[in-house]
Length: 256
Image (cartoon, rainbow, N blue to C red):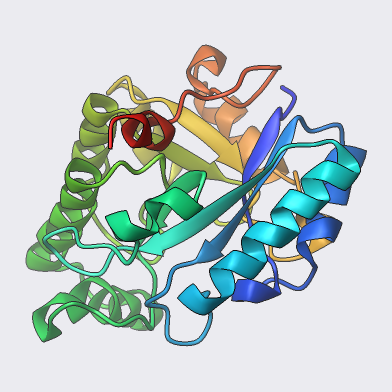
């Protein structure tokens, strides 16, 4: 297996350590065909990019692309903010972005107080080893599914990291709507048994580093090891061995 492109990296715009140029330079050094700068979404209290910074991010991506001759995609890792599937990337933002990732994160501005359970409820359960609550699993599952149904999300990131949902039902929704599931090189988020069940749904995958520092760009060894253990079909992973994904966000924007 050889990674073709890394579609999940961060810079100081959102919790990363290295610049856009440094991320792109490292991607080129590793022989990648493209890299995406996917900053945490606007509603993240501490680490989210702010809308006033987006034009600067775009300029840096464009400059790096021109200087290094490697595609540098302007992206976002949007936050799922509600059980109804609300996210913090609006249609008014779409024209400024090339790639649309989304996931459930902690410490964000939720749409309603009742939505806090998908973040804080899951975090407390994970941190203190609390018993899994069916109501929380149901809420998290609905949040993932509704986000995929209601928004042209390219990649659902680190499914079930510090979160409990019905991964199979989420995968079925991703399969039906053309959203990729991420296999993360950084976070252990699905057990081997969960991933095996997810594979049976027919969903397609991308492998990403979720790099927050330049030394981790393209580092997907953890994901590759699990792919081999579980026996994930390599022809269902669309950013390895020279292949590139067909993302739904770009197609959606053609018809806006």
